[in-house]
Image (cartoon, rainbow, N blue to C red; front, side, top):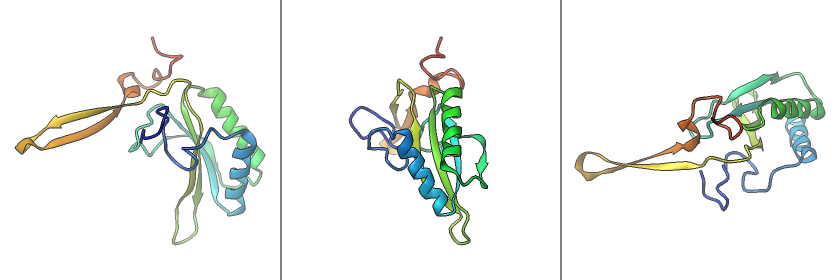
Length: 149
């Protein structure tokens, strides 16, 4: 949700903090690997909070145990998609958990589009609220500031 000063997307861990540096990202990846979690890199140009299924960059790092190698994947994704949101997700496959245990944004577009509140009156004067990302006003692949016509 957009609840903080500066209208930054606040999804995942560390979202209210300043952007993490590469050594800080590598330390968090190391923590995930030390716990036996599989780490993957994902990206999107539609940051709506209900858009939980982002595009996966490469394959999940099930067998990679070196945080520096995963950081290389993060930087490759940054180079390929500089105007997208990029996050690192750590998945715990332990029986009984089987869930993402860590998720944090490692890249943001230079211009974050924000959200629009859509208010609609329905039956009985009830009000229905919906939020829409301004990014979705453009087709996929043209949502970043560098790719807009």
